[in-house]
Length: 330
Ligand code: TXA
Ligand code: MG
Image (cartoon, rainbow, N blue to C red; front, side):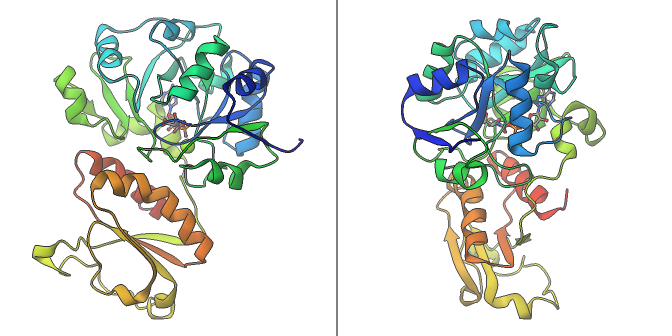
């Protein structure tokens, strides 16, 4: 494929998508790799460009609630309530798919994930295209999701047609995925829209049970982010319990001491050992920085990325999920 075009033009992005091309698009969560959702050849190219397993379905992005009908058969009343409350925003709803949609969109499932991203440029692209845009995160499969256009270029240069350039993403973790095909909403992947947020609209919303995971959200079967650096939990190091929560020293650690990085909410007890440290002023800032920090740490050549443990609730649940998966502990 020819060089990847860098552009800030909505019209150019629309023209490329319209003719079956692949364009990376900014959203509030992470950059997505877009193709028109009704074009099976374009969808097949997404899987090829990313090296994505064929059994992992894509999310269809819409610019309006009306457009959901282009991909979805029916919408449960509570799902419509969630759309009205949280869209545009980091919430993907899994709904019954229309029979005329390409099988690549759903990886052969009877359902499809749909979301309206909170990014004006990308909504303008989808609106002008007039067709929903399928977009997984715009990383090579197994790499951290890209939160900047430069990270997209790092992974996909020469493999995709264009990147619509915009600023860094504001949320930094992928959307909350919620199964809306049953009686109540069920969270399949935690994100910035939390269980408490969903319960404020539908009190019976719940988490998936561990045994429900694999068949309902195929993406959860695949290991996310296999870095050269190991990712591991440390802490928590909050001021009241300084140091007491630290993981037991690892006998192999001494030789890696000079090549570790640290991200967390609090100062680590042993700052001198780290070549890179990021202290996030809030959970939201921790979430926003995490994937970028992984990439920076890799570029530094660190062997080990230490992430401070956070309470597994609210946004902390999404952070815990991503760090668990990166560390291989889930
Ligand atoms: O924030 C996001 O969701 C970003 C931006 C670009 O919108 N997209 C994203 O896409 O993270 P991706 O492909 O990296 O993750 C999609 C997740 C996967 O875990 C996939 O298995 C799940 O959504 N998913 C998609 N369709 C599904 C379906 N029909 N049933 C269950 N899970 C589904
Ligand atoms: Mg992804």
